[in-house]
Length: 311
Image 1 (tube, rainbow, N blue to C red):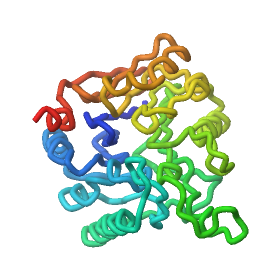
Image 2 (image 1 turned 30 degrees about the vertical axis):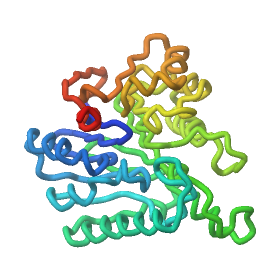
Image 3 (image 1 turned 90 degrees about the vertical axis):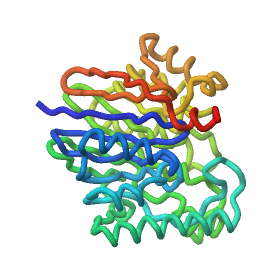
């Protein structure tokens, strides 16, 4: 029987998700740099030395922050990511970008590439592949599907006949991949920072809704059972339309509940499925075990983000 364990580490405004399948391990994003003591402790406590892969959904520091540390300290076989071209119109925090910000991001990007080369970690640029914009990773006996593997920002920037030729206007979140895993009848969607934006740019409109519809069509399904919220549950992310489309049974939000009260996240999720279980990662991490059934446990462990803000 196929099975997978998903460890949602207790990060806020940051994703560090560890996948486990019969003593094989992989990461979806690695958290902000200051979370590394917690990430490292989790790996050591679990006696994990070898990591099959790291999937980087997009190039923002709250997702790539610990790639270099993990590659240097553990045996990582592969890194899956898109090329980074420094086209950020806004920063990872949503402020207007500038050349200094982009220069620093290129330094971090080069650090990631060099760490992989130094440690014989194979780099797979998924935006070099085109299989209906889906890339599949074999993880032991489980398929992990990456959606939106095209580098949409680069295509907009480099299209000499397009409206946005040679313009750095958009946030790297628009380049975020989504991750889908199917175990039996259970559907898992890890939303990275996939956006639900109502932008006038057709190529960037409602990317999360388009992604879910593509998943539904490919697998002939109509519900997401385990959903890692897009973009930490922030404003405009979990729109009424998206929540109604997914009807999530479990929603893990890498954020603190006290900030989520500012948005419609809880309301929209509850209206779509009144029985949804919403799990923020402020005072606990979660381990989901998924076979034909879904079981999870909470492990109390206050987020370093909260700890730092108390001092």
